[in-house]
Image (cartoon, rainbow, N blue to C red; front, side, top):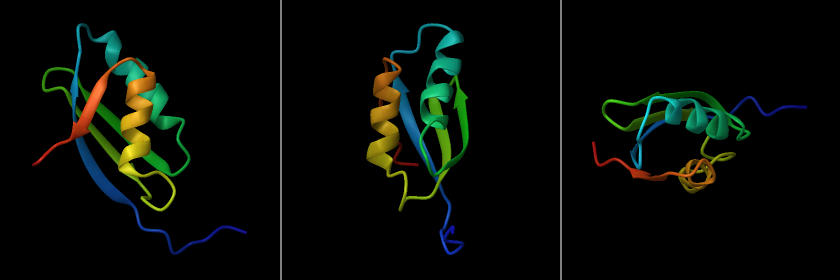
Length: 79
């Protein structure tokens, strides 16, 4: 049985360490593996990572850790 009362939020992170467009796929793959993540979009030019997720299942810290497993550093963006 699934809980249908979950709320999806949109989180924007800033990443560091991008060196080529292939970094995008690595990050998207790691973050999309997290349970509770419904969408991931990585913008190479601006180093933004946009994630739609259920914070009760996948927290911002979980997403930052997933980006770290891909080999990059990320932090929540102030805007």
